[in-house]
Length: 573
Image 1: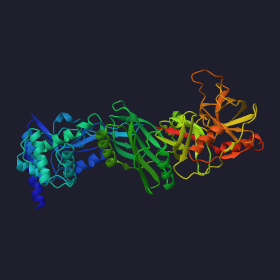
Image 2 (image 1 turned 90 degrees about the vertical axis):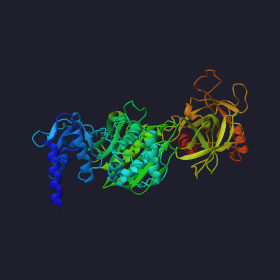
Image 3 (image 1 turned 180 degrees about the vertical axis):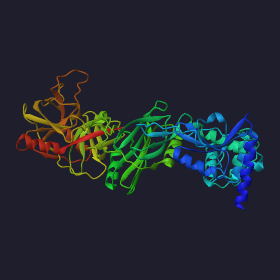
Image 4 (image 1 turned 135 degrees about the vertical axis):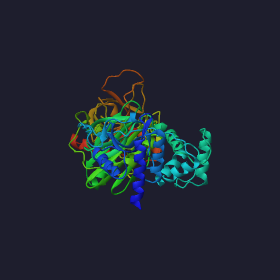
């Protein structure tokens, strides 16, 4: 029975082919593949049951399979008949001969060779316009019946996007779906039957995909990284490899768009390490969802500039994933591109060599060519009690979205005194200082040796540095009794750090090098004195340790004591 049925189909198609006219002839486009070998296998399969099977080079790495050519009216009959009999895919359509390049089937035309490339191999999917054909409601329902569940759900998604459907995406075309179809038809100049024809479905999807025009969603097969994925090559282009990333930088069509493909050998420990490192990068804003399990993680971050999504997974000893960075405020296009990347992502053989490092990416401020997130301002501070409370300068913590101590501990402002330029911070999580300040009770001796501990260079060095000088005056230049004048050369990052005598007792807090716009010598600096700092602490409810004086320490021990109490204060956006 099946053999008779196939013989009847073949005989009918042969008759159509024999009566084909050269004028206004079209093909039935049934499949496209990005691989020549796969295309040839599919051509053999189709040719075993159907006549008039052709293979064409579509250009840019894609190959098409088509039946024909036929006169247009006969091609429409072929299309409907074969789709109804499920001999060709339900999304087959009519295409003019101008779309096709060199014929590669029947064998003998000689397939085109593909030149080697150094960047990831890119296969560009053709974007043909389905031929608009009129269908009766019965024919429309027949063509609709050939849709898979996924295709029906996608149709509901497109109707939902257009604002006509607000129920569950379930692939069931009930009353709600039919009503939304009819409403869309009426608003787009079609008869409101509630059943979309093939041409109407094509128009709906054309509208749905209009937001992606110019994005050139393209299949990329990166054998070096071992990843196959669809990427918006209209917005990004391959730039370089810098382990563990393949960088795709912005083309200029979408400002700030970037894609990273993640590829490295590894295990669960390395996956956990990558999860932590990614969160230190400027491309992963702090606000957003974080999710990590044993073998995978996702990171989403958003700020006023960008929205970033990263996901990675561990399989067969390799960590693979991707990051999409997109400008904030373009959510519809970003979400559609992200969905395409997620649905197409597939590990393939190959993993990026960890030794691949771009020469221009080696810097303490970079990880594999990516900028480490930097605070907008850093200063110094010092611990004043065992609960981890810290004194620093008030300008260091003004207008901060987030404050951290030693980069790892979040903190909040307890109290400020703008007149004295002092702020008191407390950690929002348990923190055990290595040492705390002991404030000197009474005035130190003029011209005595003093030292300032501070993070002179921000967070570049792992611990505070020491600068030595002398106490010049117990008052400020205008006679302020809350200030002491120091003969010492400091840097901006030292502000907020402790000023100590030769025994390690704190005699004050270094204030920023600012003389109300007047130019002072580099070695003239000032400190809020011990009494002023203690006054602010008492108002904040902090009881500082006080000492009448400590035995003189040698420079090595003094340095160890000072750096143990000194903390890096960072102000973040």
